[in-house]
Length: 323
Image 1 (cartoon, rainbow, N blue to C red):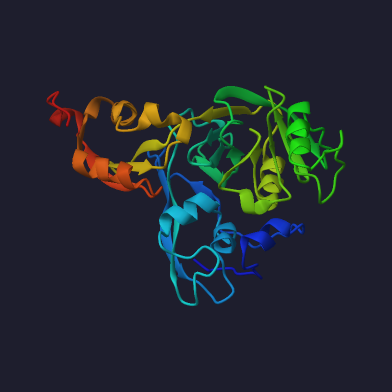
Image 2 (image 1 turned 180 degrees about the vertical axis):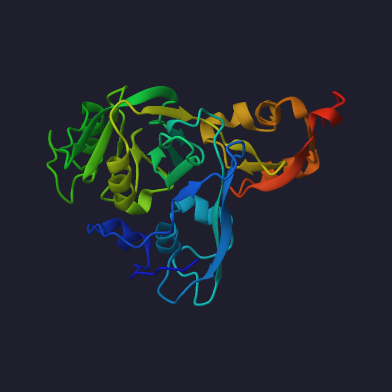
């Protein structure tokens, strides 16, 4: 994979101050599934950082968010990776356990999957982008909904709760923020059936792959532009909570684990129930053979990279003792 670099800013303060939105060259974000029954796509790649790179630079140029590239590269300095440092690009994905139609947003993964309608005899296509999601206290809700409005160069009308929060922080907001570089919605927005929630661009692209919003879904400016052009009104949108995903490829079983949200500790900590449920769903009548010790290690590390943990047992070999 060819690496694209662009001028970077060394230091979080400078990153937060930048107001110019640019469009860097991008890695491929579209995948064709050769076997409709498979649910693993992409590949893990490696590149070497150049002198001027930061991890956020590399993430954006390769279709990744902040959390993804940090988890895949523990110990690498965020702002000064260093000339020649090897960087892992975790562009390998297990598809979410949800109907593969329209948009699926997996909040703990901070990633969006779009499944365009298929033509007859066409291989299934999946388009994926990293996203920024709601921070704790302003969590993005889990729901099944649809796109009910699309708008370019939108104005932003901050809700009273957000205006109050900003006023308390000494940063008062007007009732209307017009289109332009100060508008946090960016140049494109798509409103969901719960109308206070929107999929939109951003004037702060460094927040992609973080919990930074008041519940809305943010994309890199170049990603929302592309998605906006592809998605039609009434496209279904499913927002799910799947820190662990189980998928298959050529009879092999893969587990992908991400850190669960802080408020979901009681739900997921030490709990393999969701993994077992997904295993049963993706393997069907064939059953499965899984290395549970390895599965537990994948969950403990939760670095977002899928790992092969077992194999599907053909129906004729299924003795009812899946393990």
